[in-house]
Image (cartoon, rainbow, N blue to C red; front, side, top):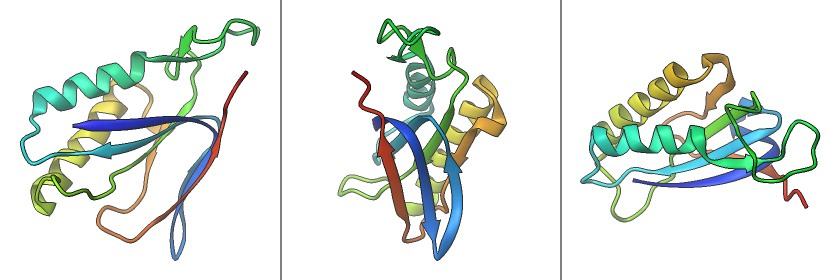
Length: 129
């Protein structure tokens, strides 16, 4: 399991029309491989929620707060790749991943696209300083 995290000012997913969007937070592109397990998923959820990529409350010290600490939003997408898990298994694993994020954080702050659909993900990166 691999995840690309991008700190964003905003992000959205469109499937014909916009299906999901967030303001400031993280956009996660999650790759689920054919041999990934629930243990891999649990590790990834914890890692994502703890990684410190945001500045402190005063905006002075970079790399001091996680998305959870800063109470920001998360947008998830699962792109395909050559070692991907089969669609049915992957859909279940991705659903479990989203549910675990919601359980460990705040459900209303976790957004995603439409599994298996051709999506356009619009990301405005927050490059900080």
